[in-house]
Image 1 (tube, rainbow, N blue to C red):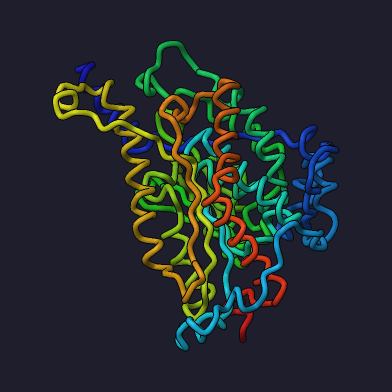
Image 2 (cartoon, rainbow, N blue to C red; image 1 turned 30 degrees about the vertical axis):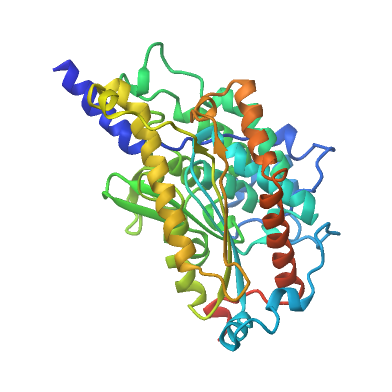
Length: 438
């Protein structure tokens, strides 16, 4: 009986235990950090926020949310791209030349992966050093699952990527403080307290809703109550308050990996229990069906922008574990506890592998212009845990992100990407939503 219960519970771990969220403390680190290369972007208050909610928000966060949304574009360190380098030369076919003249949509997609979210946050920090501007200005559509959803939530709330990395490293040990002794793979219950995660998230989401994010943002979770995916969309939240949610609920739900955290019970903003439009959800980690979020995002992109556009899509992974394939003899002897960590890794690898297979085929190059970029470094198995918060591990994860810029081939790809992004913005080539074309 006990053995069966353990195996059943571990099965849940296999299905859901993928991506854990990192956390943030904006009070001292983001707002008052004089060493930050890029100043935080100011955001306007969400129009649906009540007076009481605004007054309870952190006063330093209020200072960020009182002026206009976009800052002027600062000086950049990206090489200026001549038109012929973007559109191609005489070797490009006439059909490709025609397609290249369509508007472009720059989009950013961040994978799940627990504390390994430091890797994409580091990549974005290095992007910001090169472009001289915050990531929120560089892209026009954003998506992220689990820890990737929190990275995206912070970025689109106006937080510089440099501070996102710092906040990871400062607060992860608090979030991943064990709730009990001897609890392998959450057999005895969630390994970590979801309230620790929520309390840290609330230091920058307090009094704010999903619709407060001015950019188009997509974040998935899985609704156990309805037994179906729940896709959070900031543009829907801005248009219809019944599709709006507290931002803390959104970010904690997408990261609530069972066996790591308990599920998140939440409802749509701002309805009371007896209101006819109130809907209730029980959210767990969106990584169980879309750890990369890109395929889910592209369905929404087509609805918003149509199909007559080009893409400059950037996918940032949280690292692929360099695993030595086990032998058949060792696999057939594995019990539930021994198999659990392997299954978790296989599921993450398979989910991301599906995206790596599909997206380059959906977004094929046009002439000599690439439409899809993915940066996802190979990481050592010793650094692959989703919840190891030792300083040495956190430093190494950060180094993986920096190493991408030391690799000659990868760095050349990054430089070309950033030059193309700059060309698109500087020449007014960014795609408009269908609603803005009328």
